[in-house]
Length: 81
Length: 308
Picture 1: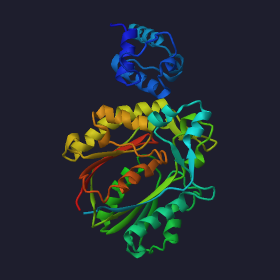
Picture 2: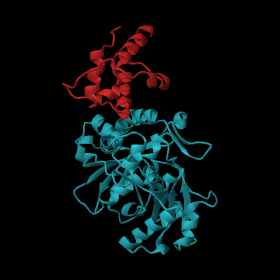
Picture 3: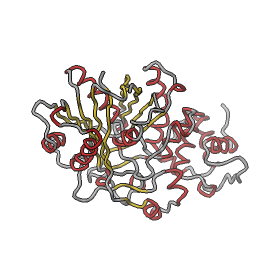
Picture 4: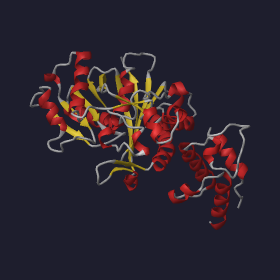
């Protein structure tokens, strides 16, 4: 099963217009620090769920707030499934 | 053929500055303009309710059309904030505007899908009964059930009412409609024990993004057209972010699916007729897809085709 990488999550942020190509990527910083708003995060997680076939409950949604944390979470979920 | 002949509207005069309200939630101008899309929220006066807003919308329709109350065969009101529960608001309206005893009159309890549902229900009723003129009124002073300290709802919902005249002399024919419900998810958007509105923003966003674009495609197919053959898409104005997301998922340019609620907010079942009213006399839009979605969770899409 393919892992989900920091680059994959970054690509989804660009695809959802929450970030632009060339923007500084801070994989361990809170998403808001890169200008990713709360509604952008809804869209990011929708794309993650659709692309990786994982369900992310609201309680985990609140906790996952960096690119690296999201990528690790998705990889672990996919391995567990 | 029964279809839409004219639309009257009413927006209360008072506005809440959403930038000021957003500052209290630590939200900036970019978020208000580009994500919510709502600069100002229309707010009914303390003494106003669904009934009084509806009376004003009907007055606007009468001013536009010279409508005679004796000609109305049916009056249907869409609201989820009726104020007094008994009697139904449409009965009070019936008395207020002087309709005849022969006029059928009832309320429909639906939120943001309500206008599309009501068009389909009232058109079917009129055709079955041989009625010539019917009124669909939408009226929801939602700001009365929104807690000002609730970040998820306080920067979105505004108050409005509309009155649509359906008749046998239509401007728009009403096509076949998709009408859907996912009751298992009703808790994502509901009133709480305190009477205030609760919205799980993420759940509602995901529901809209995943279900509305395919529903619009289905409604197009149901009416024998492709998405590309439709001139304009007037969808419920939940927020700019939701409208942008639906539009992007359908691959449409911005001008085909506009966001037009910057000056008043999400007005629930009035959002589609408010936009449609501006276009009744604009012949450039021949085919208009309308789509409502929200409380229920409930969603519906239909195609309007200009015939006059």
